[in-house]
Amino acid sequence: MPKLDVIQEVQLRAQLQNLMQQHRDLDAAIISLDGTGTSDQLQLRRLKKMKLDIKDKIQRIETMLIPD
Image (cartoon, rainbow, N blue to C red):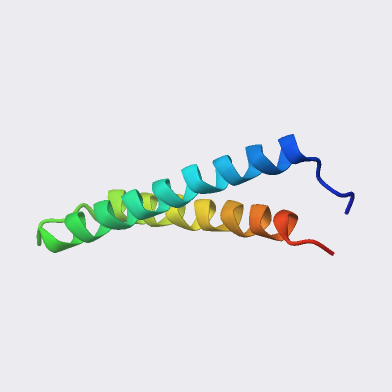
């Protein structure tokens, strides 16, 4: 993988922080929805899928940021 320049690294780190915040927000929403006792299972599955997709994106960016 080619070496990232400073601007690309800064952009990736900002995107990583954004995705991590989204992941935490989804986690809170899932816990809240699941804790109500009247949770919508379809909505819960969608949120969990979104959270998993974001986790995958986080891992891809972290891999890009690790120097060879």
